[in-house]
Length: 226
Image 1 (cartoon, rainbow, N blue to C red):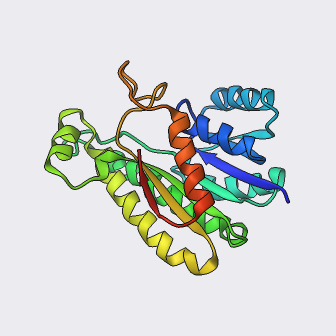
Image 2 (image 1 turned 180 degrees about the horizontal axis):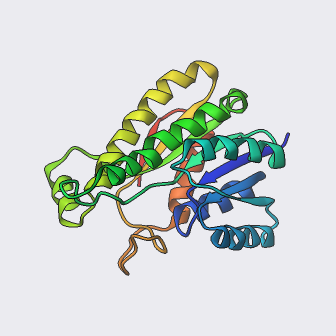
């Protein structure tokens, strides 16, 4: 049976490694991001490895665009087996000076976009599918974490991560009766090649991708940390 994974928020680092890992396991891969050029390069790289892939340029913070995305993927690659949400926004770094649009945008990506994608893909996912979510250590309710978020102007991302974590937990409870697995990998370091790599990154994307594969395969624990 054909299998398709939708990688939302495609770029270097985690999502690239997830696309390769699941593609190597026989999944067709839908790559999703705003940049058509980045997606085209990603498709070429995957096809060079013998992986079936297609690009879907999309604004993942726009619900109407996300709904259209799911329909396009289904039409081109078939039913969606796995939804991987790797998208995030770093707007509203300082929440005291951020305007309403910036504050809204961080939740559009972290919560509204993710939830819209799940809602639209639900008929497919009920056939034993998975929802896999990337999150970051800024979600933790800890004074040192909050100090870091303030210091590096990542306050908006920290709040969005916390909201996304809560959503993942509730989705895991809500969807298990339908046979849908929901899992989250919380990345507590920086990933080589990613936007957060300042030359001292301590994690490989492949390590995170393997963790996602382990969660999807075991379908037991909701959260894993790397």
